[in-house]
Length: 342
Image (cartoon, rainbow, N blue to C red; front, top):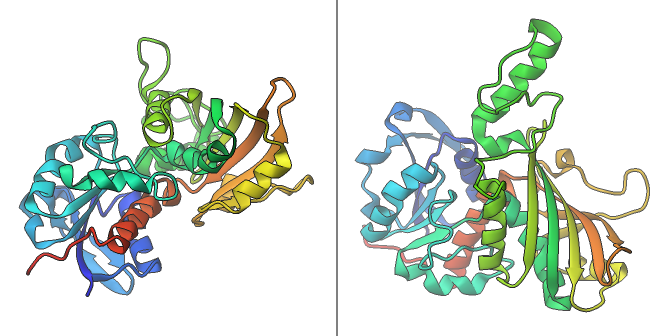
């Protein structure tokens, strides 16, 4: 028997992708509901060959569903996720609202499935930040092998991480450069077309941004609080797919060939690493794929036990929607997802 599932934020980039991936992975669904804000009420979204009509969040009866995939932003999640959890269903939330709550598991199935033991405290599970997600999937098997001391990460994050408005701004600015003349930025603080912006989120007092802070806080909660991590997050003119340049220092020696072998056998990781001009993955090639791709694995000769690598993933899939559905699959496999009486 399948489950009754609601997708909240069903009209957004990630919400639509959640519906696609539920169908692709054949997650056992008996009934599915598209839920969004009142302004999206009645809007059509697709689930396989079915057309769903969005229902209003503030009018929906969540006691009639078993699972809620939430992708409506932090403010909405703060207001609604705990209420929904108390009504019965488990909420898998894609925002930053609950990630650092000690009573809420912050979960990547390939990395810390044991965190599911906390699920019934609030009936909420948090999805990590999309950049954290692909990073920890790549770091986990290496950390198990040689224990990581320090990581330096520079991200190259696509505009889809800022939602539909971000994608529209890149599209419109790119056209404007050739046709209409310069256009003023709206979603981003500076022009994103033909440019890179070393700023995502908001500045903290220490000069880092909250996006950078999320990455190290979440990595510590998911993987190991003793890993020293420093991050620079950069927005780039790419529609879908986040990339990361990752420098790792280990406690014990780990050569590049061993690292490739470890990563090739790790869940969720795809190694594409040939030393020729096309032997690596770009964000364009990751689009539509499930894997976390690792390329350009090489020794860092400036430190005793160091490696560099390039990590790429589709941020709308593994970085958000896919991870949420994989969490749902894990709940199902472990018998933690109950079908409440109709």
